[in-house]
Image (tube, rainbow over all chains, first blue to last red; front, side, top):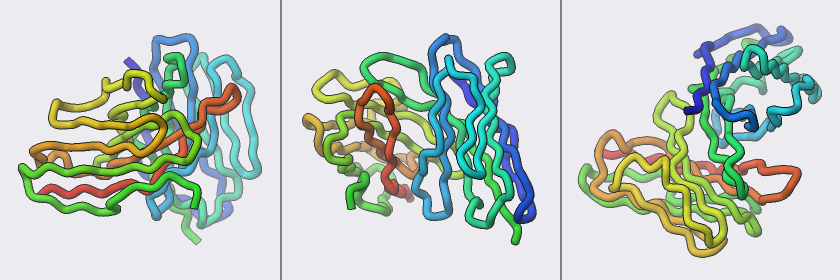
Length: 117
Length: 115
């Protein structure tokens, strides 16, 4: 069975600080996908990234970066120079390659990030 | 707008009543998912539809839950004889199956409160 653990329930940092959100996953599959979603106070989930299990390269997108380490089953997310607009709940998720496009997601319980101005 | 829409946005119902939730996916998206998000929790997968294929119902928590989708259009999630533990936000997502991306686009959700 799949499982995603986000041990950090809540994090608060002062604006402009860097912050890392941890994600650890469990799966028996060799092919799987990892995701991060942002859920701002408005409630609508916003897709941030999808990463294939065969691609362990780190990725950077503006102030966001992701560190995928298969050896430790982790897919951590770092926000550099945080801003108040980054305040949200962030979810890490996992899907197995089930064929014909079924990518049902297993979500972690989320990390509530608050950026203090 | 061209996003996933859901209705109603809020629903309050008495325990034991049936409710029907609606999802309008993005036009052209062949895949549709329903998820449930209990207060303070992550999302739980409920059901997956892909075109006219048999749906993946492995996440439905009990036989009180059912869902339908005709072709690649609207989907309805029905909860019969609602219980208080059914209170949650029900989220729908759709995706376009392409080799490069299966990104799921989520709707705003329906907040269900069972009193």
